[in-house]
Length: 389
Image 1 (cartoon, one colour):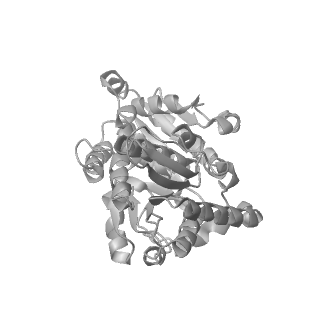
Image 2 (image 1 turned 30 degrees about the vertical axis):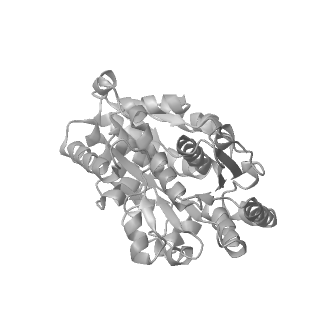
Image 3 (image 1 turned 120 degrees about the vertical axis):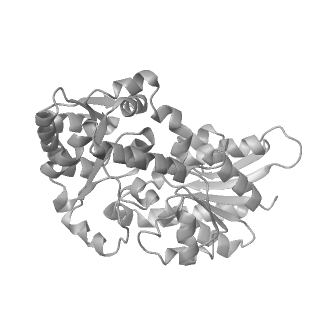
């Protein structure tokens, strides 16, 4: 718990994040709330970043940050107990507002229990579930326990309106707050004239395993067409040794760089990218790096194509409503296809110019009010939703 020095009763916020990405969002929200309400009492669940902002978590985030079907089933009794403990603590705290952050499998269960036990507590959900892609019935169901939804993607408010979801406001994606780190200075912009290819085979072990070999073959084909090709591969620390072993036999062995600062520096100087689908595609687009995107899932997971209803798996394409960035999925993800899409992006070509034009449209689509930040817009809505409003 933390309290500021302002006069009057503190604003009591119970905030629940279920994994590290939510911890990052929650920390930004806390900072923005404190700027608006210096007397702030914090309770809830979060990780190191939220703890650094004054939250004393009920239990370690590692207790509930579980991914994958089998691990979740194995720990289900423990997770259900943590859901009950979190909801009961929120009810006992009598906060002015409950904020749940992403991780809907955990946080929405907490919210439903709180709403049943203490219906007067306002509940704000920070990050929309992907109801626009699959399980659209979640949208109307959320109206029973979410008073306001904070969306990171500009098309999500309309999706919830169409599907009968709760009131929803686009607050801006957190990457908007990092544009200075993503975009090159004049010297770095000049460096983009060199044929530097950024290769991003994913951060999960399954992604790295399925994509590294085909990415290596594609790099070899690109190198035949593009002299003096320089290849850079940003990696997370716990995958670095595995990735180095997998890329050692590539026709052009990439420079493997570690850490967020090195990754961002690579984004600012890269000419083009070959990337695994994910949030990284939005980072690349905002950085102005043209790309081709690939993804492969296991044979067991191919059933998802029957239930996932989106025209693209690439975030910038979904925001634009236009498949401006080429994507190669499953059997279409071949070295020849990837090389054929990436090589033109390394030159001054119509393909490169078309993506640059799409990135300009993306900037306009993701824009929020001048001078505003996503964390600040989110904090304003949380304050308006609180019982103190």
